[in-house]
Length: 149
Length: 293
Image (cartoon, rainbow over all chains, first blue to last red; front, side, top):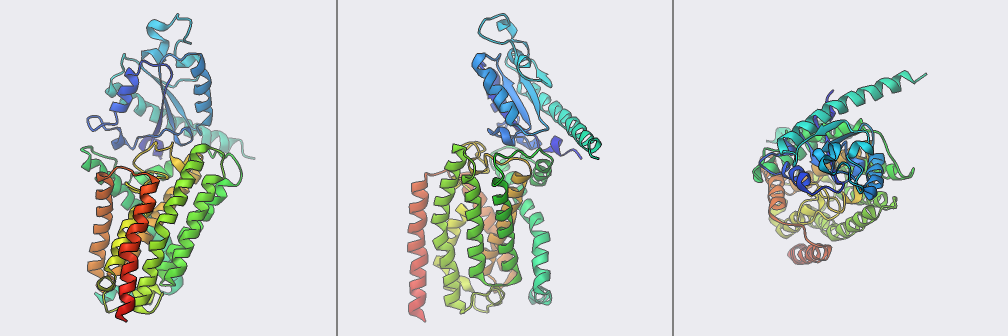
């Protein structure tokens, strides 16, 4: 029925980003861009969230944290890699201290490029993630109905 | 004007309870939606659609249920049951004191739910909720006592049909009740345990470890509780239904206004100011009423 599209709750985690993309995520909540008119709430709690917004190109310590947060989120859930660092590592790709993007750690559904990613792109990415959420929910329902005796 | 009361009296007790059970979540959810929309507009934003709380609850019901132990969600079920029971009692016209005690029991189960999980955020939120309960319970009981002093009965059905306006005899009690209503509605400056607007105050406070259907149930319980609290405000002005309705709506808007204007205070100030206000406004009103008899 589209409830995930109307009420996606977002969890934002910074995995060694320079804070540029994080600032743009927070700015999306301010009156100029206003994410809340889509029903989006920036919750700090993985157990309440549907969408994980990950920024930064993930160092060793962030790997464990990202996995921890991802496992705590109830299904259906989506991961959005915000910024080019989270997408592929950008200029830090070959550095010894970073993994080179979030998709080396978690299954990413939406990539939002940009340095820093503009609020309009982030909002676009989150809305695309909502559609993917709907598909995942439909799949879970179908598979759970199919597996019933 | 009296036709509303005649229609109300024509329903049996069971029918009144059923009406509350069915209608209150819609009213409460709409109130919550209006709250968010109005708060957004006051902040210069557009805000979510007014039916957003319903979308939130419907989405939460579709999420996977993750629990840490088997006891935590049972607390929420009990919270829901006793809150709905209080509201049903109140709107059926039964004993006001029983309503208040049932509501306090519901709050206790909410706190137990907060303590039932090991997360420190939950524990902090539950401790703050305990302090909040200690802050507002004296005033709520004084309200029942004051109404008994004026009307000679605890029954809501008789209180609402009183010919003398309760507000004229209980101005201090009403002022005190308005003060602690901010705590019960979980609005700034007293939204210590789980804030609706500050989404990350101690990571969602008491509701940190609840997800999916349990969280949806907590939200719906708050809708029932809000309708019940506004009903208690209505009781002060029961002599004239239209005045009472206007004042009830004005109180709700007033709470939103206060929420937007004040920042959250520490628990010491919450407890001290609530008790001070209760003593000055509430107790003095009761004492004056005592001498007037």
